[in-house]
Length: 259
Image (cartoon, rainbow, N blue to C red; front, side, top):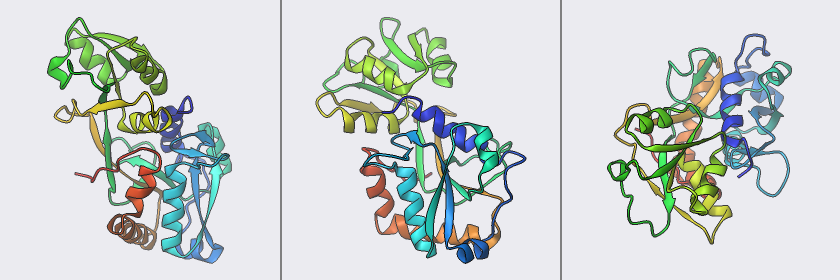
């Protein structure tokens, strides 16, 4: 996995509708122009990439949505929130479907089309850890710095190893430097795709914990009702015919249904 992928994707989601960005376009304006625009990071696989054979599931999903709308797709490649000020993008993929989380972004959300969260990643064949209850003070668990998972595990007396990047935590699990890592299933899926001889196993240990799972949706910059309805209808088709699931699977990621 490219370093900073998770951080970069979250940054784009948070920054896309900051005050000062270009004004949003209606569905009629998008159709008249012939293309809808996506904001994405140019070097953040599996989310998005400007170069290489793989362009990321966010780009592929946006392309599929564009086809359903009968238009093309253009990309506005952004790295920092300040770059967004110079773009006129219409959407961002994998936005957290939570009004409070999106309160400062100004994004309007489509219907949810998937579900993500935090899981435990362990080595294949690891029999000592099957749930959160199996973790104890003798285990070392990798966590993202200052994350909710870090605080939760530390409160339980579990020895945590902090890092800034999910891929580095997963590498430590693979090398047996730590016993498990609390990361997103996206990170584990892509790690397994790119490390076929050192695959890790997902344990959904946090499914019953608050703030550890969330739905994902398309984030839209103040869309008119017609654009929002068109995106929702396009998502319905992509989910029904299996296109959305296949796109995520190409990056080793299971697209789970929203709740």
